Image (tube, rainbow, N blue to C red; front, side, top):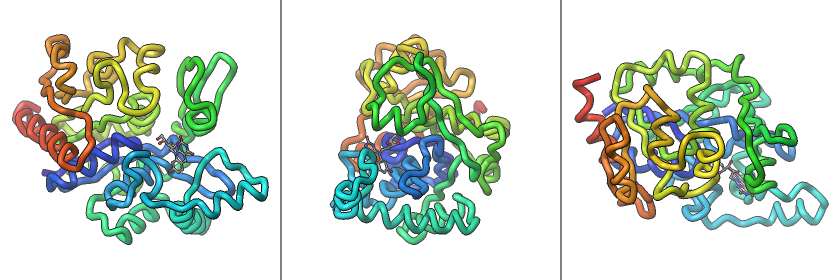
Amino acid sequence: MKVVALAGGVGGGRLAHGLALAGADLTVIVNTGDDFTHLGLRICPDIDSVTYTLAGIANREQGWGVAGETTAAMERIRRLGGEDWFLLGDRDLALHILRTDRLRQGEPLSAVTADIAAKLGITARILPMTDDPVATMVQTPAGELSFQNWFVRRRAEGAVTGFRFDGIEAARPAFGLTEALAAAEAIVICPSNPYVSIDPILSVPGLREAMPKVPVIAVSPIIGGEAVKGPAARLLRELGTEASPVGIADHYGSLLSGMVIDEADAGLAARLRIPVRATKSLMQTDEDRLALARECLDLAGSLAWTS
Ligand code: FO1
């Protein structure tokens, strides 16, 4: 089945891996709102989480960076007084150095991303949501913060009043993105943060319009009122309706055809006005990733004739 997955970082990479294991003809559209230039290097955290996970070299517990990483460069940067709040491992740095060099020579992010994925033996297509610069800004009562400053430096603490995707108005879908959507038989919205991972993707002008009339299945990133990782539950409480699959469904609205929620939230299925599957949605092993992906594809398949 031709599947397009919309993904952020950690949860996105894991379900994308499950979809690849399930044999889907997979394209992953990845959020680039977290991207920033740091120590002169262009860092693309969600693209790298998805890439490393699909390549089987990710630091599984952490959700970002490379397994078995060393930090010799970071230690020397620290000793020489460089910025050390954003930890870049040695192998990760190699990718940032090469990518930055190629971007600086004018190569689009989608081309660099595709080539790195191929070099790492990945068969799925990994596409940034756009080749143009977009920066998620976090709005707080004290003013705006850049995403990584908020997420890493301030550990996503403090009141948030909203998000702004700087540059989104001028952003065009990445090369090949609308064609991938047009060919899709199902769309899977991965269990990523709806505000800072999925909304930027859906905000790229022309992307929503390019969504085909096929089942759109979202996997809830909230289990039992909590996010598996990150501030999604708190943000839903502060900005949305409720920290639950119901809040997620409200957030995505009419876009959704169906939803996969965790068995802990099965009691909420009646409040969701769309077809729902309740299953184990916490992905701790590759088998979990595969099983969750199969649940998504099975639900999409059961809805295909109604779209
Ligand atoms: N997240 C952290 O909380 N601390 C870090 O030091 C950190 C470094 C880092 C380096 C490369 C990379 O690709 C991701 C990194 N992340 C780090 C995660 C990053 O903040 C992502 O934006 C989040 O995973 C949200 O998607």
